[in-house]
Image (tube, rainbow, N blue to C red; front, top):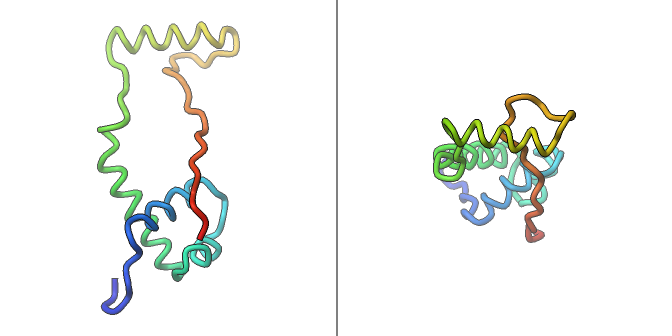
Length: 101
């Protein structure tokens, strides 16, 4: 970032990123919400996404081998005729409260 521009605190950077991922809002609106310029909001968002991506292996665990086959069978059994073949499962939405600014 250019010299003299105050950085966004980590807490606010995390909130901005979660907000951006969970809302269909323009960077102009997001920037206004968090009190930064839209270019700065975009840079913060990209930076945080990259940081999260470097840690994904700690939180996302894909089943392998026999466990993968067992998981596919269990998931297909739940969905019956409506099942997609060879699917491990699905991701549901999670509500995360975001403090207002």
